[in-house]
Image (tube, rainbow, N blue to C red; front, side, top):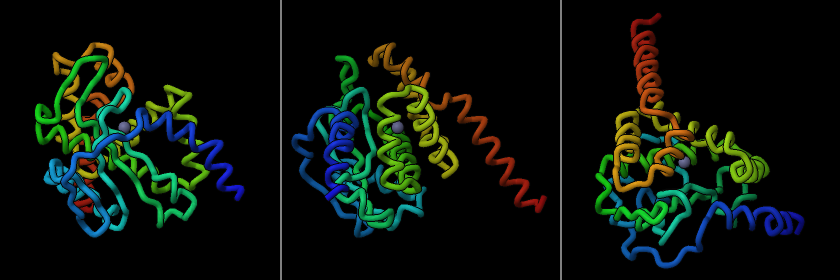
Length: 223
Ligand SMILES: [Zn+2]
């Protein structure tokens, strides 16, 4: 009962804020993959590729859903609130994907987004799920509230997701995604500035990849 009240009072505005507009109609065809992933066939190839970098998520239930419009973003990962309190292992996650990529009235359609950019983007969202997985239900609620109220916290969360993707071997895809956003003339300067400010920069990604390679070499040479 108390949990239900907490869910209504705290989690509902959180859901609305993180969710942006309400979901309308998903694009029809969907495929079930690994018994617990629901993926629209339109992005099946890219989603499978991104998932292949995260063996830890094999037993995690994730639904990829198209949504008409997501505020300020192209994709969004979040835990399903209906089973938030059922324990970490029973938790399920949604990754929302905007069917049209509308940022401040500039429009880019899904078809215009290259495959490797989509893979990088999905890899970033799966990085968020890696981050959420370790948090308790209360931790996730605090996370949501901080995410809404603090731009420093957004920066921390987005960088954590990028870092998960890069350390899972997706550095090139993440770079392709950044490059697509930062060099896409049809996206507004305000959006590019937001991405540049909140996410790992291409330079930071390269530093991270180089460091990983160094560590790997050290480990291989037994040092
Ligand atoms: Zn993100």
